[in-house]
Image 1: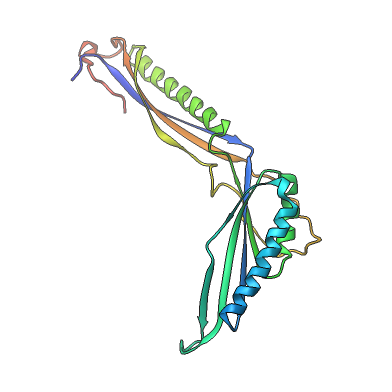
Image 2: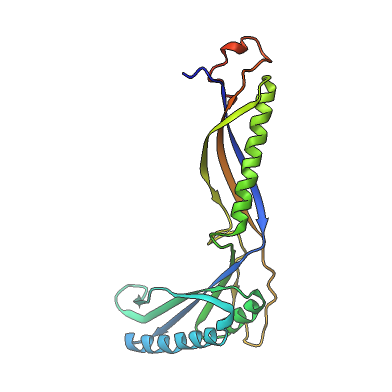
Length: 225
């Protein structure tokens, strides 16, 4: 046990920021009596999706194709194949939010295409993360000073800092989720949803000798709850 009193605290902060990215998914699903026919139809419909995305390439940062799926759909008694199902999805990352509504409507108007999104996100290195971490440090320092003052001490030196992590706003969450089956002429008006980023930090300070409670000279290692 050390003879130097210390205080260990946890600080937290939440920062709201406008999203920087919007993700959406478009999935093509077709059924046919023969496997080859299902694949042919799927190929044609996927080409339609890619053409729609190519026309709006300036608004798109990234396109990621999912895994191709082809499987038999059985009858109720599982004795024979009723049809073959083929599907392929693509995930699209959009940076031009002004074009997002028109893109969703265009994709939703294509045959055999289901569309979901947008999911609003921040970039992994968004300034909002740094702002939340700085605010968490400020919160922790303020808590430590309050604890120190309560026992007639002051903060002396910062001896440890740890980062439990930052959460929220980064990929796959925090936004609206909708599904569309719109006519191509329809333009959707979508308002970006602010993203919340929460950060936490744990700090440990040594203290000057406490004076505000009996036995202050024996306060070695005291850690407020």
